[in-house]
Image (cartoon, rainbow, N blue to C red):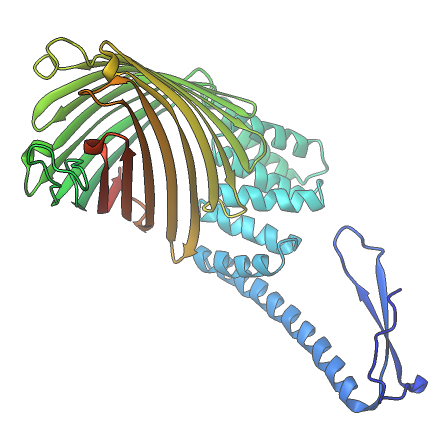
Length: 466
């Protein structure tokens, strides 16, 4: 029982105008009843309470109308409009079971499978025996290729009292899952990027060495790549993975700074419960200024652990042998073994386009010449947010501290502090084309003057999937 509300001393208390309101609400406490007693005088207070109750009723009717309009759009095959209407009701009341079920149905039709999965889970949190939600969730898991999880949900449904038509549909889906053994997936990507860079040669900001100054230039890059996945045995168990890609840049000035990279990668991947494991070997060839710079032979390992449906821990391990071209390094003084270990925590919000991640890593490079050997650590923060209209904004900040093990040119041991900041936005123009606008700022602070530099790079990319 809430205490009586205080009133102005000038207003006498009139018992005959006592009004009692009962508010039944608060999720998970359905027996909670709050009685609020108002002692009031005159018609002004009556009109105020009537307006409040009428407004609440009007809002409820408005949401009900949006649900009805959404289902009408859904039945007409207008899944985008249906999704938007259902999402508005969901935003107003995320615990509304009907809104979540409707949102899941529309998201599935739009192939937003992760959105549909979360919506069905919210329905099942309220009622774990909801047959329609269980079937919908199983269908989503099947579409995602999570065959083991889909079988579990279908099996649970078959133990329930479901109609013969639903039972036949479930058995058909289970038969389809059993028949799928091996599948080859190919994916290609083509990217075209126009950019402007105010310090393409990493020249010192306030120090000129031998006439070297910052070179400001514009240019473009083209990248193309093909990746493949092949199921070894049952679908979703072990996969053989591989990719080949190439990227080349062209500048309107200073061709000596143009870069070409070629990457070959092959390995294996498997999923077990909430874990994904991947190991792959790779070869990278880097050309700088149309001359060979170095070849990299590396092995990468990844362990992804899903602590919850929203939180992931990603562990990465890299070992590389860096082999510089003999024309650049005739004595092999720069050849090195590079190792890196990193950990990333990533959290997805209810809208899977919204996320935040924190990362940390340590690294070491052991070169033949001590002045080229270094070690250090890095810290990173990144996030994405959907702005509406298909636009996703993103940003990240990264700090890296590098310590070199020996003096250089008579200077003290070199220590570099590098900051990287990136902000950008991307938008899908079609199902296979995405535009990405970004700006990157790099600041490197070193105790060696000629290693201090600032760099701004703005780019616009068009990425095509095929």
